[in-house]
Length: 178
Image 1 (tube, one colour):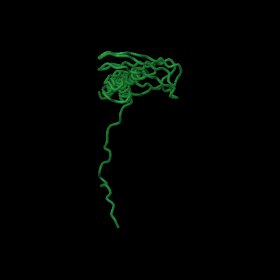
Image 2 (cartoon, rainbow, N blue to C red; image 1 turned 120 degrees about the horizontal axis):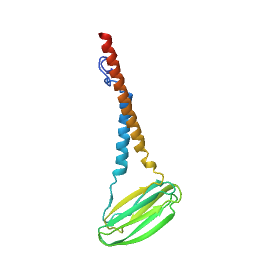
Image 3 (tube, rainbow, N blue to C red; image 1 turned 90 degrees about the vertical axis):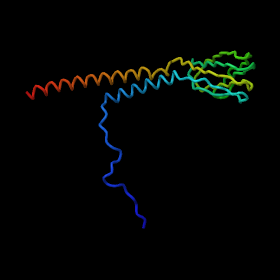
């Protein structure tokens, strides 16, 4: 018969920590939302397409009126091809762009209806840098900013009210001890 090693009965499991106050939860949540939204909007890194690589394709879910702006900069002279597809792989827009060495081009596409749209960039094997920007008509992507600000402000308000309440209780305790 095999023996089973059980933990020692006096061993602590996860440890103990003081309870988190509700105002601290709101402050932490608000700060997290604000920082996350900042990274989501500000941290846009360009896409590097290496020399000799296949066409680059990606996509985005868009609502009616949203727009995708593609900025393409090439290292050598080429004729780049930019194609936009709908979710059924129907070609909505196709364009060949002649670019000289170091030149860049910027093209936009606006969605007529909601759905998933795909774009494909073919630089014919020439190394290039691709920048993609999605402009939302309803600005839903900006929703974390006011939510984060609200949670942070509410947490700070609760903290201030709690501190004032603690000070009032301390004053009453001081009078009772006299």
